[in-house]
Length: 81
Image 1 (cartoon, rainbow, N blue to C red):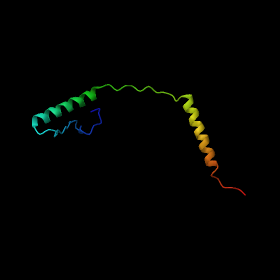
Image 2: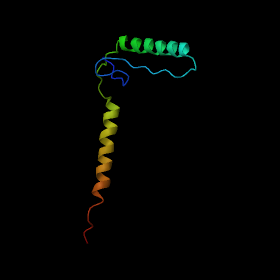
Image 3: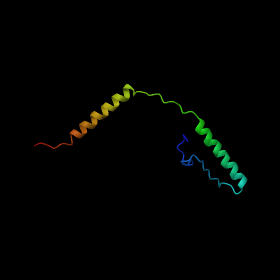
């Protein structure tokens, strides 16, 4: 239920449609393999995200870009005669 997968209904029923092969046995095997993969993905632990800070260089580039953009916009003003 933790997975936000369209194959899981609101009641918790997993629906796997298998029509890849022409025989029922092969389609059942395919469906079971996909179910096993879905369960393994649900059991897998998510890696915790460590918050990071922007580097000094990226901060400086951002501020420089903002000042350049501001100068460009300032030039768009009315021309006084």
